[in-house]
Amino acid sequence: PIVVLDGNGNIKLWYLPGAIDHIHQKCVWDSLNVLRAPLEESLKKSRNHGWRNDHLLFRETADLTGSIDLSPGWYQQGHGPPNFHPEVSRLLKSGRERNGTRQWVNEMSEFHALLSGMLAVIHPRMYAAGREALIRLDMEAKRREDADMSSILPSWNSVYNSVSIMVNRVTPYHTDVNGREPWLDMLVTVGDYLPLDFVIPTLNLRFRYNPGTIIAMSGSALEHGVGYTEGNRACLAYYMRHNVHQSVGVQLCQPPNVTDLEPLVIVNS
Image (cartoon, rainbow, N blue to C red; front, side, top):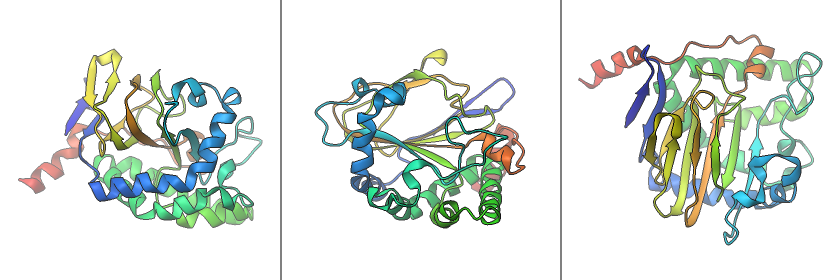
């Protein structure tokens, strides 16, 4: 494992190769089959969804391609605060059960618990904030009688309130505008593909991005990208939305610091 720090000892990135065992990797990859319909549909709407769904970024010869976003509660585009409330993302709304997204959330329950436990270790303050935000979001859903949100939150077993699922896609250099610098987004890569690097150009860093690797990083602070490779690959990117936390009164947490690791070092010693 590698940790990248800033000048104040704040943790900007965790590089965790081999963090996901082969059994869980296979489960994650196999679970994508139930998302085939919405993934394929995402490419047909690429003109309306910006660069992230640009068909030129996807491997043409792959059997499965696409990019979708899921959330049990976020602000829809053009429907932000203070005039609107968080809603379930479009693909998880009632009436869309046949698209496989709710089945996927259920199948990923154990894996999401694993990732949440990992966040509790590497950034406990963010874990606590994310968990509290979801608890309060559930209370708000019941108060507003939001049946969609009330039905999906019990099976959403991640403290992250959003996930982007990208299959066989190149990712140009970018920063994540919806994140916050104290937070660590969590990127999981699975599949069977030729050697590939995760690149952070501003720091001149390249990390080998083998299947089963997890990178937890400040995506809003560090420009990053992933190039083309042969084979089949999926990236699951987990993140939180600050305006959702604000809507339920959860304050932005402090960034993770190298001093947070001292209890772990003592235990391991």
